[in-house]
Every structure is written in structure tokens, then in C-alpha cells.
Length: 176
Image 1: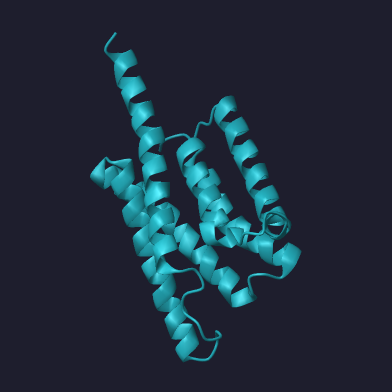
Image 2 (image 1 turned 45 degrees about the vertical axis):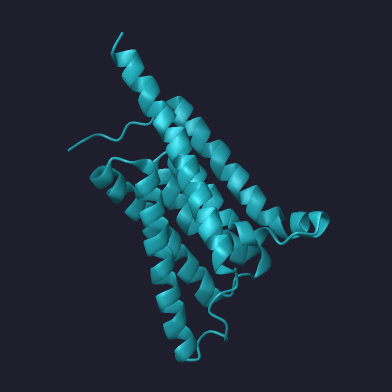
């Protein structure tokens, strides 16, 4: 059995990312009001999840996937309970798919893009079922599709840029 070892710097990065994530989620309504722009359109929970997947570790990403929607629900009552569960499930699926596809594709852009697209598809499928059962209110999409496509491409490009640089740096050090 492989031992779980996390360095002090990785632990520090995880704590910083998690703390910033909670602060961002807590202050998103106030920041949105101040800048007169609905920040939810850029998916702040997924943004923080991407940062965790790229800059900390898998465990921290899974922890944020569960805790960010729960924290948002606890401090603001938004999203509503069923949607909080649905968002947590989507984010958990996103993390799991990303790390699975990263092993398969060996390409962070493809892994991130595929993970986000599949987790969103599952989210909208379940949400459509909940709407048809009258558990959820009407309206399948609250964020326009073009914005979701754009943020997905940006998040995937970011993962590729950050992780591709790390891979190139590691291979350069190994060849010396």
C-alpha cells in the first residue's frame, strides 16, 4: 500500500487555496454588488476547484468540492438544499474525472475539458429530471451556454499552461 505523503509546501498551498476559496464564496455576493457584475457567471466554485486541482493535491480538491457548496448554503442559504447537493456531486465528479482522464490522456487540457464537460452534462441531466419531477423550479440553464463554454476553455487552458510548464521544468531538470 502506497503511503500518503504531503510536503509542508503542498500543505501550505492547500491551506492558502482553501482559505481563499472560502473567502471568495463568502464574499461573492458583496463583490458582485460592488463591481456590478454577477460573479456567479464565472463559476467561482469551479474556479477554486481548478486552482486546487492544479496547485495543491487531489485530497484538497475533493475537500473543496464537498465543502464549497455546503459552506455557501450554510452562510447564505444559497443555493437551495437540493441544488447544493447537486453542485457538490457535480464538483466531486469533476475532480474524479479529471484525475482519471489525466492518467488516461496524459494531457491536462484534454483531461480538464473532458472532466468539466461530462460533469456538467450529468449535472444538467439530473437537474432536468428534478425539474420534470417538480422538485426544482423551472429553468434548466441559469448561466448562458456560451459563457459556460468560454469558462470551460479558459479553465482547461489554464490547467494545461500551468501543468505543461511543470512537466517541461521537471523533464529539463531530469535531463541535466
